Amino acid sequence: MSYLPYVLLSGGWNCDYFELIPTLYEFMETHPVPLLRSWTFDKRMNENWAAWIWRTFDLPPIDDICLNYVLHISRTPDKAELHLNGRSLGVVRAPFEADVTDMVTLEENRIAFRVPCDAQGQFGDIRLRAVPCR
Image (cartoon, rainbow, N blue to C red; front, side):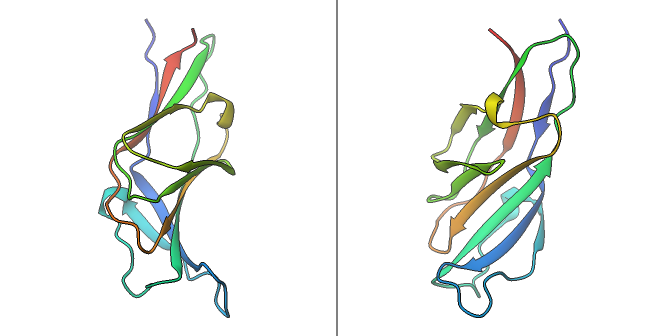
């Protein structure tokens, strides 16, 4: 049996803060988040702010194998909304697992979370696993 790839998505994130009701400054500058597990909401952004945490990734092409892709998320802050390539998957309750084959491409993909300032909890491991088609 061939090796089936998975993409570990726990590192290489970015965070933008934005006002829920925009005023003069809708977005703040982008901050790198090397490890998503260590991210916490910036306490200077109190009520009326949210975080947009995102990263991009590519999927490796695999010849002659039909694959589906399953997204696994072990833990998220409560109220965190998941977005994949511009499509909202709604508020995520972890542990979370979903077949996202119809949402991903072999080229650049973008995964993001919208986290309001009053959300509680932290992120855990996030990975995308390739499984043989049924």
